Image (cartoon, rainbow, N blue to C red; front, side, top):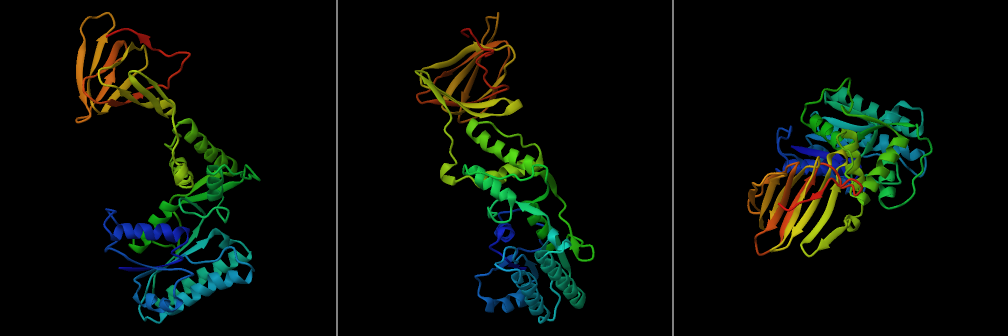
Length: 380
């Protein structure tokens, strides 16, 4: 199945081609496409003489090419209507129907040069569909966000994410301005469903099933919060789908060379303790190292609970209920990891019984509070 994608190097095109290639290579399972796709990418720097050949071969055309920031207004029609008209003229020469998906914009509803050019391109595609019996899929996409979107261009999300991640200022002119946003992965899935014939247009028009609304002020606050969380080791609350997708978008703008954050490591002769992540209302995660022949712990808690997971080395976990004499011994090893609960009201410790460092992860149900540590020394 050959799929021609115009504007293949743009934001949507790059994401779409990447996912279609995942399907073609078998990296993605459960694809709705009836056969592995062969992607034909076409962009402004492609050999224009090849476009006729591509149109003759294509089983489906995704037209993402367009102009939204030209040097003069006349280029709107040339870049949006002009290229679309050239494309469908070539498709008509093949003598057989070929479905076409057009990336339009909500601006097509407005009387401005860009909107008029998008509306004209829509009408050209719809007329082509009527003349040839081909299926048309016209999307008036809202504001899109996600990885690989160009900042300081036409996406406020990309600009905010890029600038905040790089310590640059942002401008919020109207905190109450309401934005309608669609996430790139959702858009790509919409397009793939159309290619698979699993989307039913309404007179040629389709809508994205998942669209979010967010004020400009909230958007800026969320992205600033993500940036602060990276530095404070806090994990943002991402149970909300929009916030989770926005956080992923923000992280895609962090420089790969600056993606690392150094947490504070506390060391002594026994080993080390390092807080890795604060999970808000879900506690915290730390990594611990116990050197050979040493023991860590020998304390108990009223309410604090912990889970120990040894990932390297070998040792034994000891637990004894306060006031009792019997001690439970649980051998632990990184060769066969297990999750061991440290029980409230039990003094507990972990002993390195091997000849190399014992490394273990601890999840605690609350972050450490030096004012109320809920930690009381008592040898097991």
